[in-house]
Structures are given as structure tokens and as C-alpha cells.
Image (cartoon, rainbow over all chains, first blue to last red; front, side, top):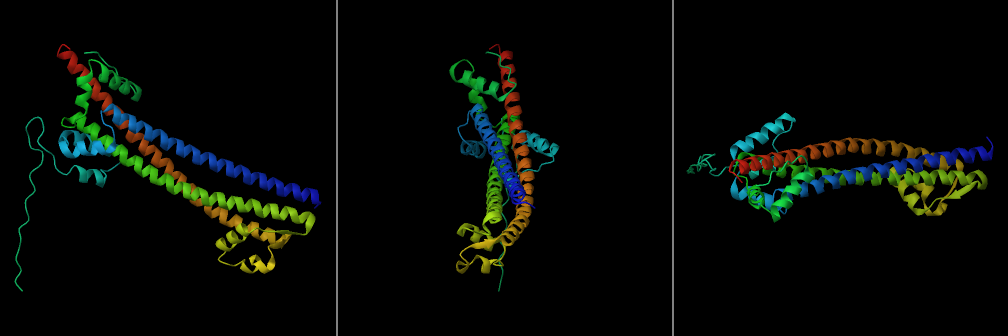
Length: 119
Length: 187
């Protein structure tokens, strides 16, 4: 193989590597942009609900409880997509306060009986 | 009360903006509650969307770390080819310390004798080709890992986007209901 031909072959491989680098950068940029877009939309949705931050939403849910019908609707919507209720959300809404209709959504948690053990 | 037809996030925001300044103020304030079913749905959905966003953010960090590994591999693959290219006319060419460190890192020290300082980083064409081959094998592994994470990232973006859409639909429904209620009350 002539020297020129050999160098041309190597340079062709180097160009291919440059293209792979550019494609990788492009893919990362696409993901970053998609994540930023969704973040912005979530922020705007909260604003539309009159909430300034996720922390404010969490406080609202904790303070007011969640209407059981709304929670069930949400569980159904999750199930329709094949999702399950995330643990963090389940922890956030374990009990429901009295709703507008005056019904108590969840029964109070019974205290566990203490059992003395004689040694 | 002014009727609002909310069909998108922008419309919802328009309703919100209107509510802040005009006769929809009461309606906007009612949204800030989760004690009726649709409001509760919107609140829980918004919380869920936030969770999905966090998961997506973590996946993006993981992806970016692997992207950097892949890019590093490509960078040294390029250097190996450039080194080889130089040996076409000069017989030997020299590797930098970064290249030597990378070769040792990916070959479990297999190339340490070739990469030590006593050798001055001087390599012939065959050596450069063997470096390029080893780096190429590494590239295949890095690329496989990156593609796997790419699929997971695609999924995380899709999930997050669908969760966000649930919130939009819930808020839209809430505004429609409130607008109807307002009309019914003769507002």
C-alpha cells in the first residue's frame, strides 16, 4: 500500500470518529433539551394551579389531605398506563382528612397493644 | 364570569394570568386546594409529574457520565489513529501522558511496559495499531452501555412527558368545571 493511500485510510477513520463524537454530543443535547422543556412545563403547570413550588404543593397535600375520589381517579389513570403508585406519593397521602361532604375517608389508626414479656 | 376554553398549558396559564387581574380571581384561588376530587387529582398528578421529573434528571446525570466515558474513548481512539498516521512517514511517533494513562486504565496495566517513562512514549506503527484495536474494543463496550442508557433515558422522557400531560388535562378539566359552575351561578 502506498504511503498516501495508507494516510488517507487512517484519516478516513479519524473523520468517522469525529462524526461519532458529533452524533454523541447531539444526542446528549437532545436529552438535555427534552428534560429542560418538561421541567419548564411542570413549573408552569404548578403556577397555573396557583402554586409557587413543588414544596408548596407537598405542603398543600399534607395540610389538606387528598379527596379519596380524586386519589382513586389518579390510581386508575396510573393503572391505565401500566404504572403503579410511587411509594413517595403513597407515603405522602396515607390518611385522608374529612372532605367537603363531611365523610371521614380513612379510619383512625389503632394503637398497637403493648405486650409485657416476663423474663 | 368570563368563560375560558383551556386546551393547552398556554391557555391554562392565560386563565391564570386573567384570574390574577380580573374576575377570575376567585376561580384561580380555588385551584389552590385539593379537597374536591378533580383538584385532588390535579394535585397528586402534579406531585407525580415532579417525581417523574426527578427520576428523569437522575437518569440524565447517569447518561451524561457515560457519555463522557464514551467521548474520552473516542478522543483516545482518535489519538491512536493520529499516532499511527505519523509513523507512516516517521517510523516512530510519541504518545502523551494522558494517552498512556488511558491505555493503562482500560488494559489493566497490560500496556504498562510500553507506556512507562523509560520508553519515552515512543511507538512504532504496529504498536499504535494494537492500541487502536484495544481502544476499539473498549469503545464497543462504552457504546453498548451508552445505548442502553439512551433507551432508558428515552423512556424516562416519555414517562415524564405523559405525567406532565396528565396534569395539563386535570387542570384543564378543573378550569372547565369552574367556568361552568360560574356560569350556572349567573356569574
